Image (cartoon, rainbow, N blue to C red; front, side, top):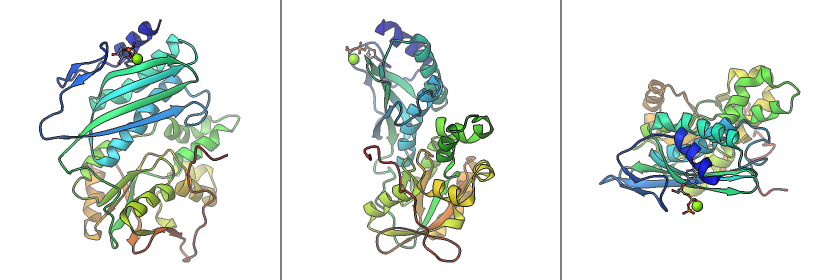
Amino acid sequence: MEFDLIDRIRRHTDVHRDDVLTGIGDDAAVVAVPTGRELAIAVDTLVEGVHFPVGTAPADIGWKALAVNLSDLAAMGATPAWALLALTLPTPDEAFVDGLARGFAELATPFRLALIGGDTTRGPLTVTVAVHGFTAPDGALLRSGARPGDVVMVTGTLGDAAAGLRCLAEADASPYAALVDRLNRPTPRVAAGQALRGVATACIDISDGLVADLGHICAESGVGADIDAAMLPRSAAMLAHFHDADALQFALGGGDDYELCFTVPADRAGDVAADLARLGCGAARIGRVVEGSGVRVTDTSGESVMLARTGWNHFAA
Ligand code: ADP
Ligand code: MG
């Protein structure tokens, strides 16, 4: 039964790479790391009811499980290569596995990401993906390089996923499809991350909320950040359905957007925005790095904006 499931997964995910010497089917995968490259490795677990709502379509779960991992590689400026998929399923549901593998493959194939192994067990629905990517020696984007005077920028728009989650509570969520789609099918900013190599002084992907994640850059870099609330990029879809105050809270504290937040020297900000625009990815200046610690958000009148909450904490009561 389990081997049948593994076979189904393999049939859906058929990216072939010369650097995969032994893929699915042996006790371990064997790969060849290209000479002169370093490996960036990340793993993330999605638990039903915690990281995705109960009732999420299997293909969306497969997509998202990979997307959150590719987003980690993007934040390092790495080029994706290989993945492992550990599936814990309550029942050996073939249709579910087909859907999940299809969603996974939809995202993996354009990146030429090969699924090289995994594990399949019984238990509460949980999907764990591990990814491996390449960086140039000492070329990875870290959280620790932000300097006072740098500009803080973000890709895309912020808050859509949190807004989408809120819309799922509605009896009919169909008018909010664009927002729900951002929750279920985040776009990992892989090309943007690669374009930021050698330019960004620090970078992180926004999984827990802007303030929480930019806070990590500040802590690792030993700096503070001043954010201008009016400059936060917010989608027309979110603004059409939510009041300004709610939209602002989603943009500041909502998790699951998987946009990149990064810092660049002030004289590079214009070039970076143009480079990312050429990749089809918006990039907005939202503030600057300052001496001190912590993230401060101010509105147009210079008042501090209070956060309803600073981000996801899966262990919070
Ligand atoms: P073992 O008992 O040696 O761990 P498994 O039966 O778990 O072997 O796995 C057999 C093969 O199938 C291995 O190559 C493993 O990497 C692969 N595999 C198992 N589950 C998955 C999965 N969910 N996705 C991809 N490959 C898988
Ligand atoms: Mg196993």
